[in-house]
Image (cartoon, rainbow, N blue to C red):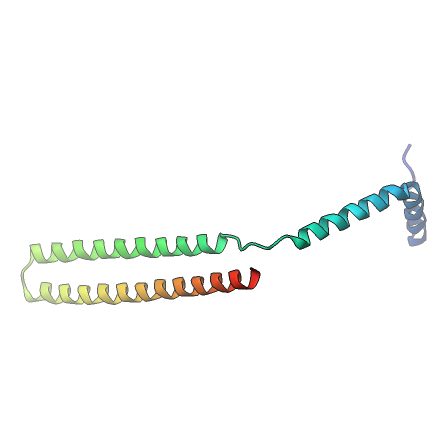
Length: 132
């Protein structure tokens, strides 16, 4: 048969004390000691930097490199098609503009990749020096 649920705070407190009194105190002390030992063991272990940051940076660099390659290939194909199918002044101007845009884009991407790599190397060195 179900026990009646406590309705007031006082009844809840009494029920809690009754349940607490039913727990063997040696079991409670063993549990507390076990938790304390686990904490002390974990506290003494050296902290190692995890590789998630490095994996993230490598993924970003790979995505950026793939994007640069795709843009360069598309631009080269467009330039070749324009030059092959029309040899007028407009085609030459379009080709020059496209080449300038691609060069600027590649330079910006290379600068971003270099900055990201430098920041990651600095962070990893700082983490390793501080932790070890």
